[in-house]
Image 1 (cartoon, rainbow, N blue to C red):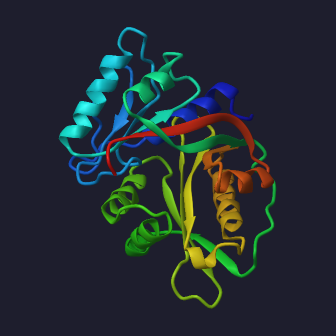
Image 2: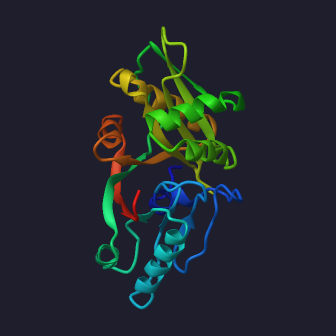
Image 3: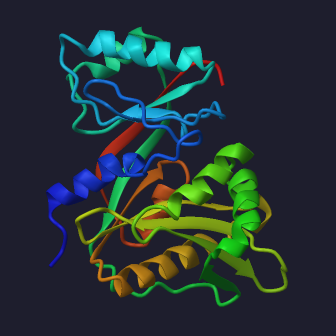
Length: 261
């Protein structure tokens, strides 16, 4: 049985906030009406983010100010994850008035036919990463994504703390080191697999590596008993590829940034 529309939207809107606390590396600050996480050592929006807003007209401005005060004390930027269910209705206007700027436009994408076969480049090999691959994972997240090295290390360890969380590495024939990285984990209490960001070193893009990564993760999701895959795809990069692979857009999710990167 395919996951319900409600559970699909929940996974898309909440996946960035499904990671557990790692004290001193990945904190979970508390703000009324918001989900949040923060990386004490790194000023970067993926690591410092709030969202899934259930704010009201009465408290939105004050909570926005609280968020800014919290991250300003750390001299960190903060990203605001704006999902379809975010409230109040004029949250965008309130964020812009407070100095937030839209930096990323994403499509919330879903694939309910994960049984489909995807034709991959035979010169590309994809496998799950192990703890022994940690240095390669950090190198690729840092260089190909790119993310700050400290955040790459935090994310590398963090993903292994969630249900069925796995990193993946892709290899090209004739190239000794892996050239691409991606990840996947299971959304709690559902039949949904969340496909997290995939990144390929610039010199190896255009060789079908993204498709090979997706094919391997979907095969593993099927083996886990999952029937649906979701992801947030950047409208300028991964989203068009995923649509060609059969994913369908069901919502928009944008990231607004505040602070000096």
